[in-house]
Amino acid sequence: MSINKLSFRQALSNPEKLSVTWELVPGKGAREKSQEHVLKMAELAGKDLRINGITITDNPGGKPAILAYTLGVEAKKLGIEPIIHFTCKDKNRNDIESELYALARSGIENLLVMTGDYPTQGYSGRPKPVFDIDAVQALRMIGQMNAAEFFTGAVVSPFKKHESELMTQYYKLEKKVESGAKFIITQLGYDIRKFDELRRYVDQNRLNVPLIGNIFVLSLPVARLMHKNLIPGCVVTDEMLAMLEAEKARGVNAKVAHLDRSAKLYAVLKGLKYEGVNISGHGVGYDDIQHIIEKGEELSRNWQDIVEELNFPQREGFYYFNRDDSTGLNTDKPVDRSKTGKGRLSLNYMLFTLVHKVFFDRKAPFFPIFRKVAEMIDKSFLKKPFTYFEYITKTITNECEACGDCALHDLGFICPMSQCPKQQRNGACGGSYDGWCEVYPDTQKCIYVDMYEKFKAVNREEAMKDGYIPPCNWDLHNTSSWLNYFNGRDYTSRCGKSTK
Image (tube, one colour):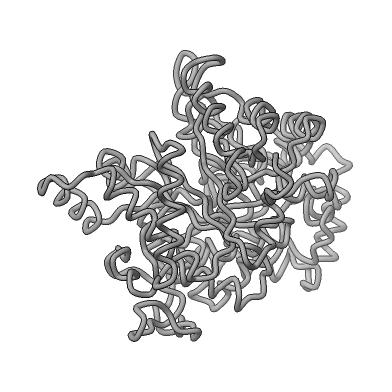
């Protein structure tokens, strides 16, 4: 690597340089064409001073592929810095720890930590999802193992239609930064006002984290898949798909149009003061990356003039900031969310909140009595029937999974272990679309959308960004969470939380 080539970390911290990374997808197999292509492109990128790293995907789409870090090691020898996609979908916390040791020993330090796509394909059918820990928990785990060893980042999606979806993304973003994320990459979308919104949100909330905009070279076949929500988290609107269809009908050179559009997004992101861009797309080669960088730099001098060309908002979508009519972007003034909907009052939530305040809150009048009773039950023959009684009761009321390390109070009395396919305890993943769960579209709402609406009904939605919930301790599985709580065994005691 040339001594003049900035590392990924150096480029992100250099105000005069827009960091450029290139996403490569190795695919299935050990020595197939896709792996050799990744290494060939990595070698070319290593010779280009403008490209500061390659990002390597980890089983995208929930399908098996070669481990990302194995190619990352080879790419590093070719002169380019790898950023490894590090997901939680296929590994429990011990396997994650083992892989982190291997990464450290291999000299790989850049990790993009994500929950990951829900598994879809595997040997002899769909594999069992793991999701033992979420992205927030993984970031904390990495930091506690060796804070100086890894340069960790995370993902956020501002391209959400509903207030409940968008705000849960931003609340989780704050948790990710607090837990050690040192850079943030956006999910894929084509709404410039949303890119601008994220920039302003990060700045106003003083998150002090570099932003990297995702530039996907979008072809018509892939756009059709994204438009049907077949690639989780990626948003292509009716209007954008219609534009691509119209280009095809007119006989426009598709590749040139796609690359030029990507160059325009590069220019706008630079104008919005993003610290970096991550360029990706099926079949994108080194010549294409060169074109995007060179034309993007040229267009960046007048980036405001092309904002509207790239603006494909979702109809009736929610924005955190008020619109600036003079620029087509945002003002610095947040919308008044007290006027954007009153949430959804839930009798279930109100009832359980009352029960908690009377019996479970450590300042509750009956807490001392119940703690004494719990201590006695815990040491008597009543422990087993009491545990069974709790399980039956909470199964009826909350679809209890009997994890024994209950987080219901912190999560609006919605159980993430039974009702979220990815068992997310610290906020929504990025895969929801129009409020629906990634795994059960048009059938089950994302639990965090439901949660936000319940909290907003009682003006408590801001509480969703506070408080870290650690991973479930499986020593407590099939035990009484009530007894664990009153006897100091559950996560509230491990974290020193004042209430459950």
